[in-house]
Image (tube, rainbow, N blue to C red):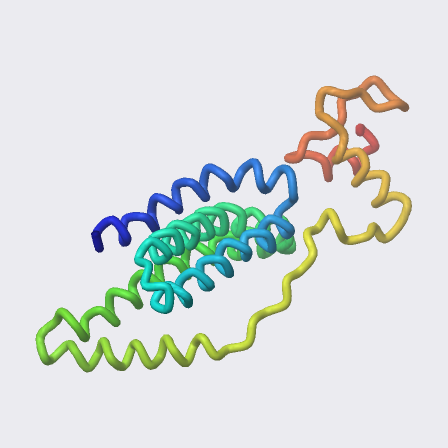
Length: 194
């Protein structure tokens, strides 16, 4: 029974990963992350009342919902961070979620040493648990707006942004040249080829 409860988390992650793409397209990145919080709140309510109700099924459903939330957030969060970061920092910011996920796995392994390791390594696990608990007390950072939501600074920049939003197969109303692709839009826009 306990192995089924534990395995529902990765199963929910699979469902969340499959749900992430359509959710990000229909609602957008930021709204998808906000809607994703509903899964966590429902899971917390189920976990909180499972003992009072005497129902292990509530724990199972809560684990599934937490997995769905993790699957959605692990797919949409890098997209949101990559789109909202400045061009100079885009790679580093997009990689931060993967780096901190790996760091969290390592911290979980080190904290687990206090229960499974020999006496010499148990102190390391207990100290890491205290450091992880202290890190949770740090204040959250504000969410930046995606670059598409930032207003343009002038009519030239507005024209460039509108050209970027057009479908690549369409033709510009002023010329017969195709609309710029994402790789060379700056160069072509500077020379007026768009």
